Image 1 (cartoon, rainbow, N blue to C red):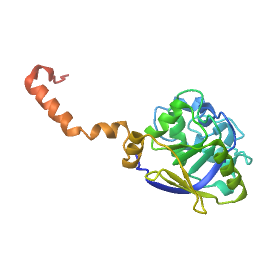
Image 2 (image 1 turned 30 degrees about the vertical axis):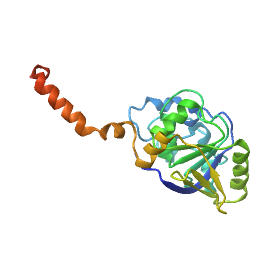
Image 3 (image 1 turned 90 degrees about the horizontal axis):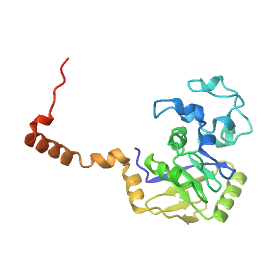
Image 4 (image 1 turned 90 degrees about the vertical axis):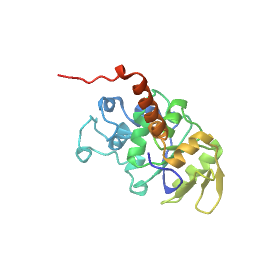
Length: 216
């Protein structure tokens, strides 16, 4: 998992409340047995005018010109601005996979669904909760100023606006530690790899019958 320290990026606004995970990544794409390749199908039913299926070439699809991520001014966006209760619905981890694989690193909203919120941290995304009035002002700024960028400083726990105003946010210390160091659940476990190997060696020495060699 990539470390998250300071990120500056173009902001894309999703001006809808209660965006559920089926809107983020529709159910037909959950058939994939991989953890990669979901970015092209982020917000698939909003992004395209035709129905999408796994394995389709995005270049063969009909993009919806009215959807925000298809508009030229938001190309390359890496900070997603959303309304309340973003990520509600089913607990599919594919939703943060799709958001992260599209290119987003941080999300800002007044509230997130709990499971989605937790899954973001496990996949290198930083979900930031700010007051609803503050988020509304950010929507106004993004719409008023093409190329609007925000800087997210995780170490200092602030979102910095272009003119220098800082918006403080809270983050649980353990989650902050994991993001700063690029540690997912596997990475956290591998910090203790030598202790695990020592234990396995001692266990095998004490109980050699636990070692089996498969023969054909």
